[in-house]
Amino acid sequence: MQIASKTNHIEFKVASLNDLGVVYRRISSIRKAMDYNQQAIELAETVKKEDRSKNLQKSINVSLNSIGNLYSRLNQYNQAIDYFKRSLVLETELGNTLGMAINYGNIGKCQESLGELDQALENYRTSLAYNEQINNDTGRVICKTNIASVYLKKGRINEAEKLLLPTLPTAKRIGDGFLVSPIYINLGWGKMVNGDYADAKKNILEGLRVAEKFNIRNEAARASNLLTDSIPENW
Image (cartoon, rainbow, N blue to C red; front, side, top):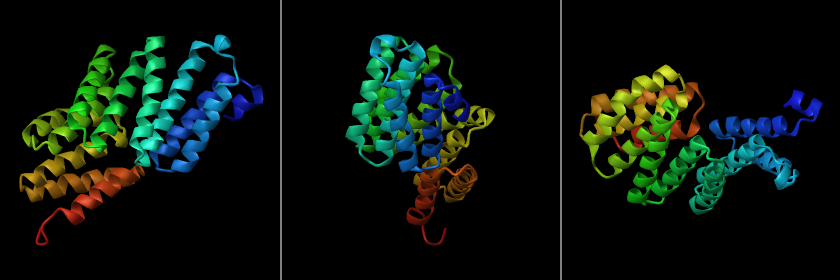
């Protein structure tokens, strides 16, 4: 960001602002994240539409998607969906398969939070199909983890586990705690529902450890909630 500012390179400045927003979102600093992503889109839109490069157009879509994610974190799911849909339209126009995959997945996440499980599942599967097209392992992990979450909510515990167990090694190889933590927590959740409390505890605690190591506060809170509210007193 410092170098981009010195050279007054708008594309790099916008990209840096967006990346800063993503980093702050990952550690749940929502206000800072929103500030950076809003700055990014405002700066990008100072360039006339007909003069925008493809990279700048992509950055605008990243800003829209990031702001949608922040509204989702604030539980304002309908506003989040509006931003994701705006981004999706633009990504489709650009033919950006990765961007389309991300937006379908994020729309699904909001629908899941609203209890619209069938619609969420449809969008997760669409996202997974796009990630398969571009051979994107990170996207595959995210989609399969999300699909498993819906299965757990529908009581389809065995199906969820069959998705999560083979996905875990890929997440570990990528080395992103943001991917690893929810898999362990969801595995623990499934074990807990089945009454296998020893394995449930082991998996949830590992998910909590990873979340705390990488400062993933929302997953740490979810793991703690499962441990404190959903386990028998004599566990």
